[in-house]
Image 1 (cartoon, rainbow, N blue to C red):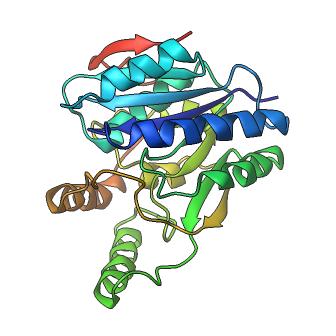
Image 2 (image 1 turned 60 degrees about the vertical axis):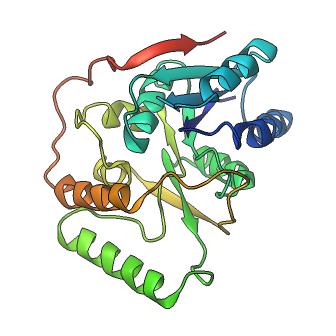
Amino acid sequence: MDTLYIVVPCYNEEECLPKTAPVFRRELADLAAKQLVGPDSRVLLVDDGSADRTWEIIRGLHESDPAFSGLRLSPNRGHQNAVMAGLMEARDRADVTICIDADLQDDIHVMEDMMQKRREGFPIVCGVRSSRQTDTFLKRFTAQSYYALMNLFGAKLIYNHADYRLMDRAALDKLALYHEDDPFLRGLTTRLGLPIATVEYERTPRVAGESKYTLKKMVKLAVRGFTCGRCRPKDAPRPPDPHIAERLFS
């Protein structure tokens, strides 16, 4: 059975984590009970230089349950760097990873479908929103325009896919050859030359706390998308992240 690491980027999530961490733990136990993952599977919580009690909460979770591991970045590096740091840390520890945000707007229960797709031979499985019916007309229009522009500029994106995805070790090894600072992961994923499957899910409101994606951060992410088409792999894996300040592993 595969060792799975669920990689969860966290930034100022002191309100959210106490509510969502038990959900992550139960899902890991359910996957193990169905013999989809092995006993060494973990939830890897990546603190992206939070200014609140996020790291204190992660430390407490690790001390009370070895199924929780932790990684602390310093200073705040941004969502994509936090995800990349977690994936690269898990690369030599896990057979497969699933990255998902801490707020649980993405349906955690489709992890089972992702693992089934993995067993069918897919090294990458992307979670895709099944609809945007709850969005305003303007938001739907701008989203459609954004994806069209990204594809025009060479960033071949999967429509309605953000950063909820499964990647096996072979995919992570290929991803490690990209050394970009602040990478555009949803664009890099489709450049790895590996088969990709998708699973659909309904996106829900945040469990607690507020979205950390400000307008400024969204514009910055869009700019990274435009430049992603020019990214090229290196001959060797990216070096260890120098911004990792602390690790918690059992």
